[in-house]
Image 1 (tube, one colour):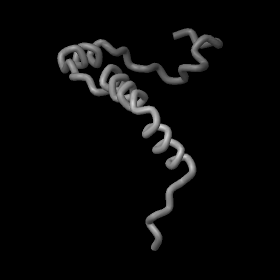
Image 2: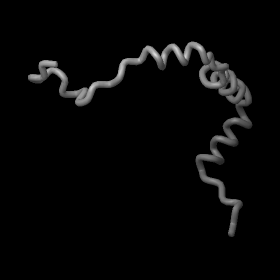
Image 3: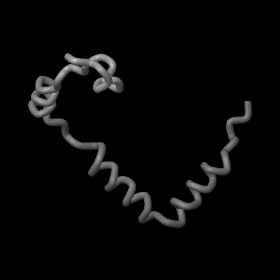
Amino acid sequence: MDYSYESDHTKFMREFLEKNPHVQEKRIEARSRWWDREQNREEKKRFEESAEPMKPYVYFGGWGNTD
């Protein structure tokens, strides 16, 4: 098998990031801001405990349903 295939998109992205290294730095910074964060387990537990169970037929709730 030939494992040397590289798609046009992959080539473009590799060359773009080589020419613009500041973009990769910004990607890493944005990822750490939005995704790679420490989880607050107590806050998550409170959020899950306070969640109200979903009622059946959510999309049909106001049409003649009296409960």
